[in-house]
Image (cartoon, rainbow, N blue to C red):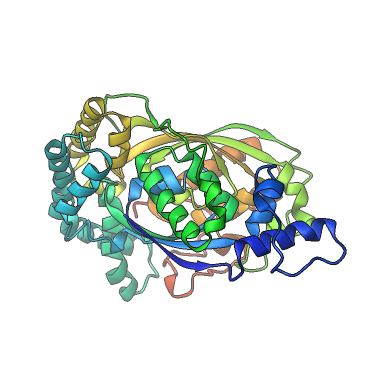
Length: 444
């Protein structure tokens, strides 16, 4: 894993934080070149908003996918992140198993590397042996589900869809890369609470880069570093297969008749910024979901929705094309092998190497503005199959809880909510005029 500092606020930490503090208590704030004692007057007393004007963008490369999903993206909403799509990973066609082994042993030198890597390599072989026939299945299904799709779309997307569904057999030990932007107080908090060896290595490199340029704030990273670990629970060590994500509403709070329902004007999400939709923040929905790790990683992109700690359930997600290809028993056996490794190696190693198909359960709480945004993105057919079905199931559950049709109408993709597709050349090819069954089950 390697972290490099790619961009930062072009003003010194000391100068900008001092200026921010003076703005609060001075008619005429001094210049940026007159720093105050930040440690004594701001950092130690907890006046940390003054530190949030300084941002740092890190390029993190060769970090395990699991260290992102169960690390950098897990808890804090105070970041911006753009992660490399899995379809550009070498893990599928030309994996470097030696480098993967080194990554495993970097974090867990006592782990049974031979046994673990044999399991990782087995998953890659299942993928490679089946990617060609699954691509053919995907192409046929595109033509069936999406009658208006262009031939170019089918040629480009059949391999992508096949990869998305077959990646359930790939270990999240796979390396990825991302741009990760945080403000100073968020970075210091992440550094202090880092709960895994992978997380500690990433935040340590970030801290070292910031302190190298700002040695006067080294004290922010000197003390109170977390020593205990956290890993997701494993609720069952007996593998089972699921062919759909699970969603249930736990409760709602608020008056469904006291919300703003005006349609969105375009693709820009203005709901959290407009005074007229402030009342929507008081309508809350709590749900519980169970989905694959692949979809869990996608779901984390909606940072205005709060999530509880995830737990592995012992279930393994088999997407439609994988089931059609007759790989269900193979998937169940593969999952059972991972669960057996988890019993032998512990939850920390198991989390690091967990397969994309392993399912996690967690609670979600979001206000109406956040849910409208999520539904617009995930009920669109450009969303991947599993997360689409998770969004549609939530919509169906909400339909049983909410009787106000104008509210329910907000939970829809742009093509239904506004009558047009905003994806341009990525138009999915579905029949946009067939309104009677706008949320069907998809295979792709």
